Image (cartoon, rainbow, N blue to C red):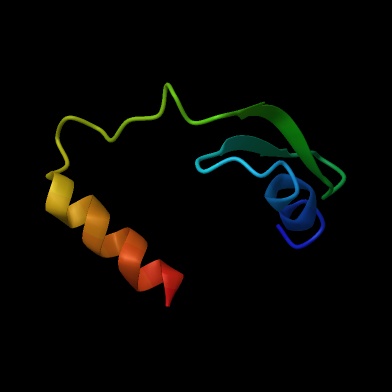
Length: 59
């Protein structure tokens, strides 16, 4: 993530989704980047569970 994080942050978007794929040679490839408008949590996951996970990861 370190190589792409500054580029993604440079977009200045409040929400971003990035799909990555690990190639057979061990190099990560950005497959798709979006502004987060179509992102959602799985319907089987309670909203508070996801919010808590995001807050813990941000620390």
